[in-house]
Length: 384
Image (tube, rainbow, N blue to C red; front, side, top):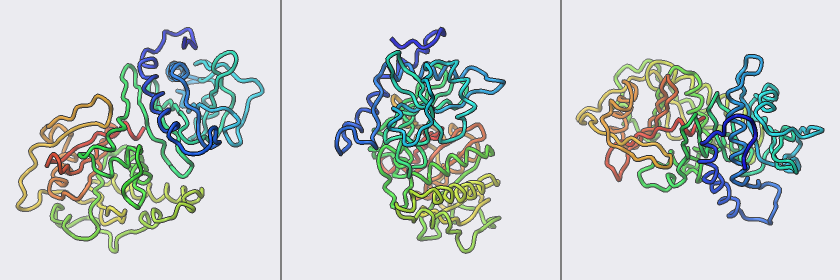
């Protein structure tokens, strides 16, 4: 029985545990190599998942010296953690202990290691290194938990598996990556399958989207084919900030081979360049970059392409289990920024638009050939 504290059990923990367990079992069973290889994690059983979620949820509601805990828990034994910091005596996994330790591990990349001992689950120390497909649970805010699938060091963003917020449960739909109405860039953003783009879209798109949300001003990023000027037909004349020649630094960083990507310096450079490009989206108007990540303009105002009809319907969906896409009027997407992006993608069917709202919502818009209309994908669940 999963009992870690005197608080009432957090019901969503039990509701989601089996589905999360299935997610981690599948890739570990399919992984090649000898059993017990050091670079592969061990999947926690459903009872362990329930216990970890329950403890983390109640810890998230505590305040330690006035601060809300922000912690990351990783399921692994000390011997699978590279160079861990280990406690003399493991601490019982409970909300009190998690809240008290939170100030020491709130920096990104530091995990509290959780494992099973003779007296139940315990926290054995901290680690910066985790094996592939490691179960990771992050406390993002009070009552907001994100379950992630740990990936190798060269992957900058773990794959989100499920998001729990209060009594709401959102489990990411792994099958979405194989749906014909989903564009290649979205399947890369999902992270369940390798990106189709040779430029390595999964890292840079997630980095750009997260950075766009972080500045909190809202913004639009238009990705257009780099082999023509047709995108200008959907932009009002007199672009305030055209970039001549196109700014290539992000494209250059993404052309690095796998060896360079494993180096810490490459990761730092990517983070800095992404922050610079995402910062442009804080300026009123849209930032335009090529699908190869060269910056063409920012502050651009979108307008309907001459001779093209106004967009009247779009498909709205979210890549989570149980979601049913619906056909709606573009006004259902949000304000002027969303509606302009929908018209842009309708008129420029080889383009993709990323739109961040000031309230934290994030939408990817792309043309869906099967539906023959714009498909708007709510993707903020992928970015937490």
